[in-house]
Length: 575
Image 1: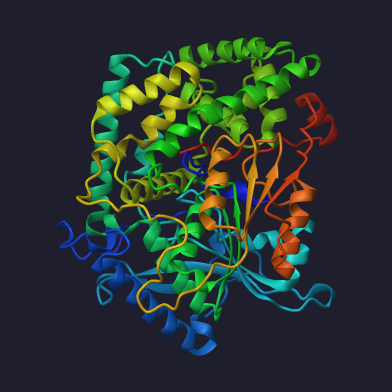
Image 2: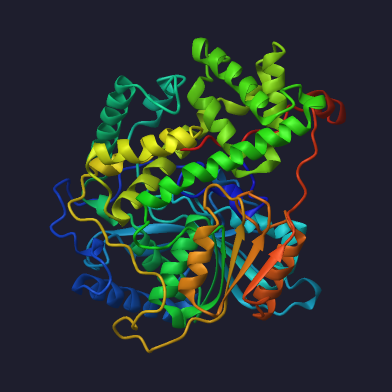
């Protein structure tokens, strides 16, 4: 399990990291396995179905706000969630299909640690957090209350997390048997990441079709109702159930898109909103083009890691240039292609482990040391960092299922393999590290068994929804790292433009770690804390210097400083 020491550590956008939340897979609540009688809830805003959904949300929110105690009954958290005694948990009931409010209901898991009032701070309400994915649970968010960089906010706010629909205990979604997937053993990527063979492509197409069929078979009629729009509706009901007239929200990665859609549909219900590591919300880019944009972004960050390792050649002996470090990586890749390391790490697991280096520079010392140890004849560190954890297999499968369902339901995707082949082949020639792996991850969307997909919401100012008074969005805060690979910087510029002149953008220049707030950069943290505590934004666009790069530390140094302790566990593999 990875404790969320920073907002971005719980999940990643698009090529999402699996959350550490224990999943409890069970069939989604479906009355039968026939196709749903209507795809109404998946239609775009402005349709009759959207008006019905908005009306249902309004009724649910009003009822939740009027219920005794704010509509949620908090008590002890389930022991297997591993939350501290100070955390309290509750269940929120919402319709599976907001166009059928009297149909099946689902329960969303919610967690909270009340404001500490430390230093005499006045309580400002609830701060609700979504870590992204989609497919990640925010249930662990209240754990940050004990971290030094969070204590000012934890003094003034109840810290509230929840598992969105489909995730963990919240109507868990599943597309395949996690035990069967784990039993398949190590995975091997195409021999040439820049140009998979025709046989490789045929095999991945067949796997994508089978995965999409599995989602339909296991979810049944519930499948169309795992969407961003439904997550927004759930979030508004949660806001009211917490007794909050207006929402104070922080979203990371995919959570920025969730927050931006909420702000578009309900600007008058927003109090303060921090959007960290922004998805490009242009509806023309949701989600196919946004995923294609990651190819160049991940390649830049892969270069950043190799350049760092080269600067520390004296420690790691991987090569004195980025090209030489690449050659060292290729030697390891060729070795695990022949014989999986420890019987568990093939080229797929190796790539997933090193993809984390494109997200978080904190893992650079571990990854470089693992490569160095492997080349010196010790595969142990690499195996410990890259092998899949059998205990988290169900959580990984659950995360991938929700990720796939939300992205596939949210928008139309190309159904012609020739389009995917053309677009990804062009990018992989320049950015081979992750292009095809990302494409194959998303390929089930080409064969998705939901008849009608949503049209993405046009984030930004729009006429008020049915029954809503016209309202302006209050000042919001967007955060971005200039070299972020998962959510390239252009997305932050587009989000700020769409949110309007009240949106402020804080940029960490020259840095690329995914997730900017939360102890990595003191300049960014000061702007966020001031905004959430006072409502003051720092200006239209503000730049912070990059946080320091990690210091090189060899595995021998780690062992000497912490006798008997293995190197820090790797983030869960990317789904």
